Image (cartoon, rainbow, N blue to C red; front, side):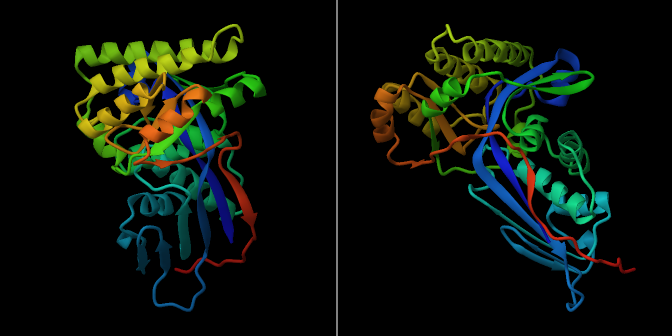
Length: 333
């Protein structure tokens, strides 16, 4: 039996520039972190006592005799890609799916990590990220960028740089004290709305010239935000103001990015003292993040009282195997 634990991510700056059609031409950059909310994938070989050959438990239960009959596209394609047979797989998570935190990609990374371990093989973070990108973007043909798979695999607070040659992951060099100060100024709320990121991405095709200009400006904010974090002479409050600016830009990149309700909630947060914030993920719903100085937290919490508050801490580990019990398994025909 194998159990993997994979974190969710929050993306601060540069979202959208990780889309392959964009960064192959213009380059791209994302500033993001993983935090202490996780998904867990439990995989073992199914004992040969059942009429079915594969059992899956996620938001629904599937029991099938053929991999082709699996309804979940990521599981079906991953099993084919890695020649996995006769499995029992269960998935559970600390936060709901379709909520803007890269949950589907965290699942993909955690599942692939579990499959490699079940085969008795080690896969490093780069391999897991690359495999998850290939699984979701090529085999499943889901619209979206590359940042979620990379963040889930690597973990930590990183600047991910994209180019025609691919990507590189650079940890943000920030003192523990300053990193904790940032963590303490971020407030996360669940809006109650969920949606598929790929659906939002497919309806917000960034091809118009003015949208490209917005994305290039959003990309430039990555370096500005990183400098705020690493330069102790700068006031952290500027990070909050930059969040507000990047959210203003992001809202202009597609009609489905925000809604009237989200705009109303965001305005309430600013009126209560938050310096900035953004909706996490592709847009349309999920989690709303605010930056506020500690003296305004009570006001912001009161303004968001209709929403569920989610306390969190940054994490540094990325996906990992937390339980490993090797099995003797003979593949059937």
